[in-house]
Image 1 (cartoon, rainbow, N blue to C red):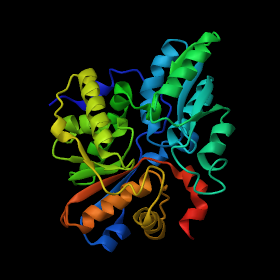
Image 2 (image 1 turned 30 degrees about the horizontal axis):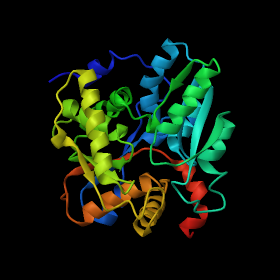
Image 3 (image 1 turned 90 degrees about the horizontal axis):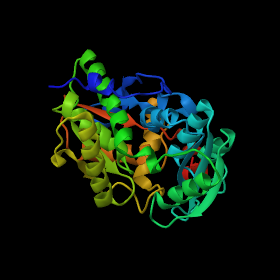
Image 4 (image 1 turned 90 degrees about the vertical axis):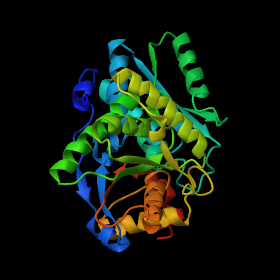
Length: 336
């Protein structure tokens, strides 16, 4: 079996984040649900720009930007995009100009604070230039158009795709599996599953490829948070295949599992199960989740536990992908 850490060491990275992130038991949530032992991988604790999962990807992806002596990063997402916030923070750290295509129309603002608070506030704090764009359904078209405009002005632009979801980003995210493998074995267990919120596909792709090398008996369970499970599954598979090729490891599409039914009515719209999960995490564990990603991811995990997917004595890892700042943009939705 190839050594995942050794394979990852062949790729340049910038050292933008604090690693390894903690793996912690959620004892009170476990007792409340009465099922398998639940652990949490704290990728909200990666550090830069209030942390999050995208920093693992950016650490690898932006090594190419620095090698080509880029002076400008271009990316995009919705108003409360966690990815945009982490791109903006990385650009500030690296001394690069940052331009973001901010999509309007995908999510109806759920509160008065949505347009200005949370991630939107941090993007401005980190010095990003924000370009309002209409949502068309094509995640990368406006980002590509903005990049072309800036190149026409003489900028040396590096384009970061929506969600930092490409093959190199997925390779970067496989590093989370290498850490979980070491940490879980030190704690005396092998995870039956790693459960997480899945949207643009790159995070799950990295987990799937990494687990195929380092955690071969662990299922990677993506909870669709977009209400578009077939698109999510297709993007995970395509990105994982490309990442596996870069790492020179085998990949089987049978490893891609995306669970539908926990996204609520649409992306960015929390439903009752999302709010229950957020409140349970806060009241039982002092954890802060967001209504767009981690709240829906934990809602899916809770539903699977209640349905008997795993038995007592098994160990499940929930991946906290970050997104805490977005919670403040949904204050009036929480009902607390």
